[in-house]
Image: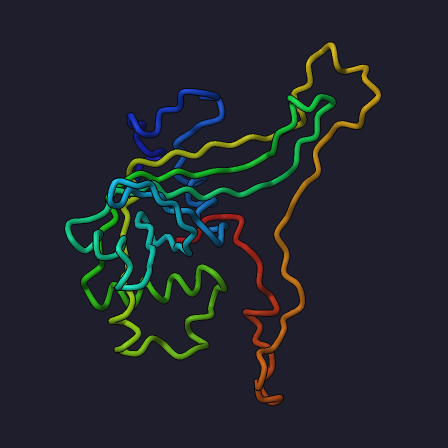
Length: 225
């Protein structure tokens, strides 16, 4: 039976604001599934690197991808690459009466582990489809799949969700009691992610209508399977 929470590890134990950190599996999945973008950090040739990437969660695995020629991908293929993956959703701007107490409401997941190359072709194909569908659900079934050349040019990495935590902030600003009577507005400005109208690509045949999975795009607010 899957445990409700991830185990607490040395890497996921906070040094500040421990009250904001949990290891709830459902909450972690929800953030990973809602976010479009993650940031992947690693050390390469003695230097720290952090890059934005698309990601997809399939069960308890997180999939990433990149060019087969990239140094990080080559390093991962040679025994795995130690990474730290961060996914953050901003839910609101917290505006306090004092500059010091300004903050944001957020949900942030951090995953530590060894990213390994996916060598099984069936798993690689499924992971790439999941990466497309993680951006626009249903999209992978409505486009041409990768060619043999494209598959060879792409490396897919698998990262097990084992050393994981989620940190959140919610609620109003935490103004000092001595500032409560100051004549400045304070509160929360909520932020949401919403699409604009679809813009057809140049040269698209007029007979091709915008598909439902594009016009109905939204981010999931509960974790998928």
